[in-house]
Image 1: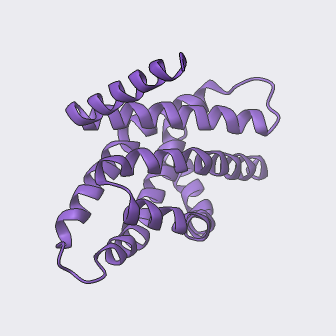
Image 2: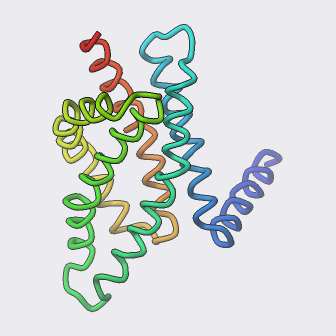
Length: 185
C-alpha cells in the first residue's frame, strides 16, 4: 500500500499537467518515450554504445512532432464528425489510417534523418527507400491499436496511448532504419 500513494500522486500530477498544459505535457511525454524507445532499440540490436545522435534525433522529433501533431489531429477529427453521425468512430479511424498516418510517416522518416545530421538528398533517399514498407507495416500491425485508441479512449488520453504504442513502433522503426543504413554502407 505504501507504494501506491506515490504512484497515485504521480498519475494525478501527470493528469493535472495534461489538463492545464496539454501540448507541453504531450510533447515532453512523447520526447521521453521516443528517446527511450530508440535507446531500447539500440540495446536490442546489440549495440554496446548508445548512439547519442540517434537518441537525440528521436527525442527531438517526439518533442516537436510527437505531441503537437497528434494533439491537433485528434481535436480536428472530433470536430469534423458530429456526434450524431452514424459510424462516426469508423470514419475517424479511416481518416487516421488513410490521411494522418501516411503524412506522419513522411515527417518521421524525413525529419529523423535530418535531425541525425543527414543532408536533404540523403534524408529524401532514406524516405524514398523506407516509406512504402514502413507504411504498410504500420497499417498491418498498428491498425487494431489505432481503432481501439479512437473508439474506446477519451480524447485527452489518445496522444498518450498513441505514444505508448509508438514506443514499440519506434523500436521497429529504428531497427528498419538501421538495417537500411547498413545496406547502404
